[in-house]
Image (tube, rainbow, N blue to C red; front, side):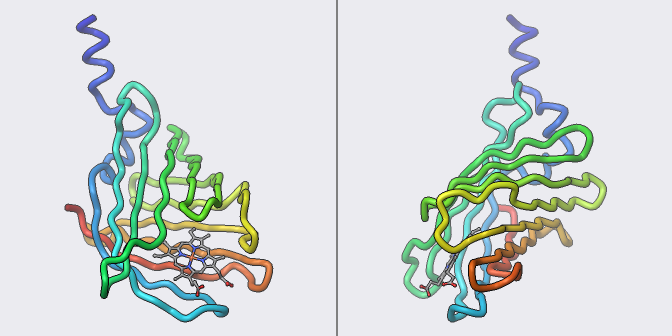
Length: 163
Ligand code: HEM
């Protein structure tokens, strides 16, 4: 019993290289695409390790309009890092779109690169890539997408600080 308690309260070894992500992050981002007007947004992002015995990080984000605070896009999912430096991520978006991404994570560079394997229930989106990187203690990310009308290029860029 005590052994179980100890085992399940520790960070799983597969999650440990990404433990710098765990917690809440808050910041601002900018969005754009050739087919839309560019915009700025506020964002809060949460990475947690709710089942320490399992090699899984729970992820959620919410965004809002900077002027009015009105909610914008939100999403949540699970990040599954592997000891060999690979990672798979599943994300459900508030728009109904679902993503499965695969990629790599580097503990040394604090860099995570993800490429969609599956984009489901999307009318326009064909492909998504996401890059997350720690830069001077801040979390930077870029989300790119390809649609039926445009090749893979940035839709979102944001910088967040740990709360
Ligand atoms: C527009 C996808 C995240 C805000 C769009 C469009 C697509 C899209 C397909 C329409 C582009 C077009 O009409 O050609 C996605 C995907 C996301 C994502 C796949 C995540 C991976 C976000 C987030 C926000 C956001 C986080 C807000 C913070 C917007 C806005 C527009 C837009 C404001 C323009 C809407 C309009 O003018 O009608 N997005 N989006 N998106 N997106 Fe996103």
